Length: 233
Image (cartoon, rainbow, N blue to C red; front, side):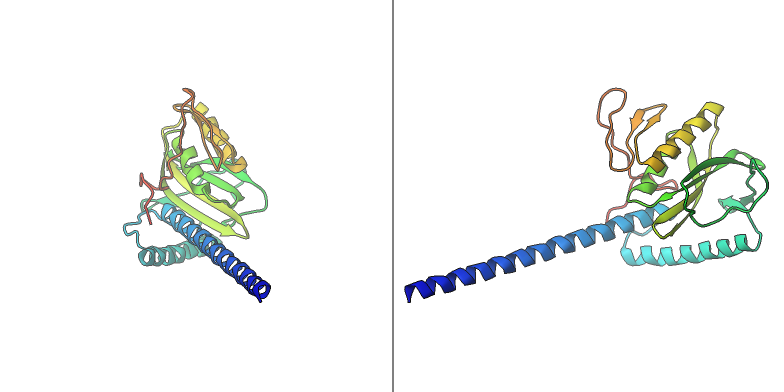
């Protein structure tokens, strides 16, 4: 009888351990799920030009309205109204090759280009197309700011794990700074550190680096259009 009782206790303890492990696994999965949701919400906030409210319901309502506006812009492009705009202004984008309407969706090839906007000497269009990943928009912001440029208009399309960002920037650029921006954009695509002319080496993606003074440099997860700090959930 004593041996039978010990066997029953052993079975009970094993069952309790399995139950505790299952609960822990469930809690971990739920924590990871909430973390992913919060990361997506932070990304959404970074993409909207003027996010005034930080609660999830208001944010999602703004996203719906923004998607409707983007859909209308895509329809306009499909009907031949090809322009890039910012701050309620409209201007065409010059192309080094023949005048072809830009394809609004991400392609299968990685792309990082900088082109001039006709009639707006201080504005340029930055196009970035690559695999989507967490922190990509933050890295794009840092690349633009590394040459002291300011984003005035931004659009993003993500399909099948690939994303295309088109950002109109305002910038008193020099020829060497255009090259620096192109190199920074290439580094964003390759998910590696790039060189900031003013601050030294800058971290992108999940990688870390040190600046020219050998002190840690954290990339600010800033908003794309003018906001300086990321909203907390």
